[in-house]
Image (tube, rainbow, N blue to C red):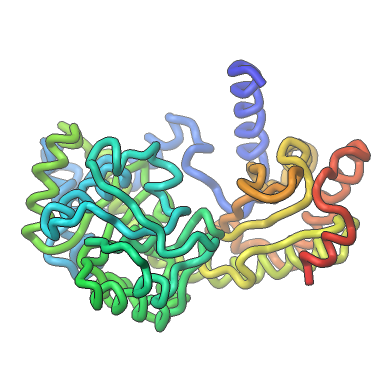
Length: 401
């Protein structure tokens, strides 16, 4: 597919999602510039004095976001970054300089390994090692028995590319203890840490206290425009500010992103527990709906979800599932699924999607989900007989068992 065709498909999807009266979540990228700016202007005064002067290179409202986040996480200090990628790369290079060890232990499905084009090695000269290659969180034994020395252990909570999966609280404590036994520091990739409290049974401060530093994002779960914060000891954060300038992250004015971050902290953060709880209802109904349908195999992962996000797997090509999803939105005004992606490994014709349950999803009953699944499967059945190219029935039954 050419660039023009892909752009047309993207616009088609956005129009279908925007036109849907029933969705599980409204994503920030689905809105027009005018809508986002109008909403920010209307609401920002509820979280900050708009008669203050605009920020300049990190003062004013940006400093307020830093103070609020450091307090939420129980950390000494925090620094605002334009991207989480920058924040995390700087955190890891700072720890490497302090420990004298350029090796970072992390999961091969973690964000720096999958989504940052090898930046840790090419930009910072760091080397990574993997305690496990399994699509799950690493265990304490794997950290303890890793045959290579490392100076920093990075833990992504939740591990997005494995299905937004989390360890239990006891498992997390054990992994951290194993790193401490090896004299390593611990950094948390907490881009989505905000929604983990329910699964852990422990709050943000307790979770952050396990680590030496933590990064959090404002646009992934809190509906901010952009931006992230690195929090930790004051001396580390001061050093990170220096590297932020060197990396080109000393942005002249960031008040739109900072104001949207404060709005996320005030409005979305208190709602996240309800999203997480309802995601379990939606996931169970999806599993039930597919199990009773003509679809030969399906998987909801994890079941139940650990956060308000999870994966759904089906034995069809991604383009077939995309077409069925967008047609359902166009024809019924219901968006059940958004984008589908080919499985990164395994047999051809196996695809997955990520499901997010946010405020609009709270309106969905289990019955609504079952009805939407039936509509979706009907569109799959209407596709050509060659549409399903995944594992055969015998393999499907074995996998489901």
